[in-house]
Length: 353
Ligand code: GDD
Picture 1 (cartoon, rainbow, N blue to C red):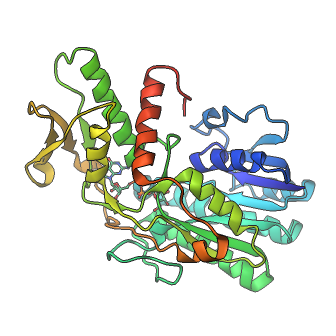
Picture 2: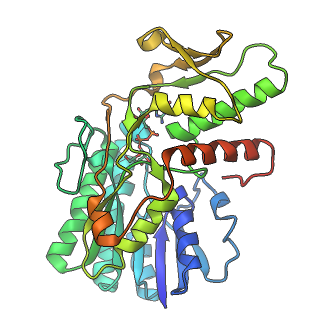
Picture 3: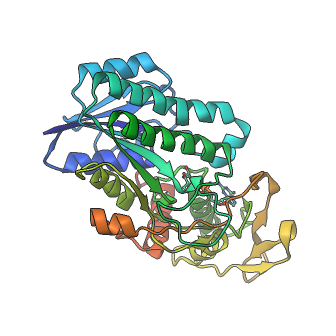
């Protein structure tokens, strides 16, 4: 019977992973670490908040003393480090805060493990942002890195630190190089949830009689392409990595890329919303309208990034062959789920996150 520690347990991935582990028979205790003043609250833990095997603790990765105590007091078999400053755009404005959590935090965690609990198996939330997305090719564990944001560089430093601790001290550290993964629990600042919310806001406007101008969704780069999977699939991949005999690094992806524009079209065309978006104009002047010419989508350069990751497409062969992992949700299923969850939330009968 194992004890697992999940940092960032109130986030999209943390909450799904906690549910996943608590459903398994072989976890007697799941400890969730939550940043003090976390904006997320505990909404995403609604379904498991009162589970007897779940303990929620407050603390930050910058607090090395707290982490040392944590690993001395509890016998932690598995540590999943999902706590991060995960918004790429924000990292350009706050590179130091991003590095403190995403890199220094990882050093603190692995020092605590090395000195107090060297048999703990460690999962590091690494990311496809480390690749930089300058070419349209399938990216595997063997591809070279070229991060294009302070977020990407902080995550790459943490990736190498986890590898180094494995090579230097024999710690069981795994990097999950995860491509974008979404769900109804996705944070509202990420483009998929922003689009799903806007499509459903338009639906509400239409259903209430469509008076005045419809709400406008303001986006940045419509041509960015991402390999979007479902977070529920990806947390199972994280767990599988720590069950292997040897530690290693694995890409989790779907092998299919879609553009932001595709995501907009599919979301507004969803049966709950029912609009075919028509595009007109170019660059900053491009707009997306409905059949009556009403503007529903416009470009706002505030959402452009100083350097953009144009396309990310993952090769998940190693995960399939070594872990037996396979994504279960299709892209269309995921969009459908996100739109339906937004509708339920608006109508007051869905989970709040
Ligand atoms: N957020 C946002 N808002 N992104 C926009 C917008 C907008 O209004 N308009 C266009 N985009 C484009 C971004 O420029 C980017 O190319 C793409 O949509 C996806 O942006 P995000 O949803 O913010 O995610 P991300 O790809 O930057 O990062 C996510 O995935 C990484 C894995 O590759 C995050 O979850 C990271 O934490 C994660 O590591």
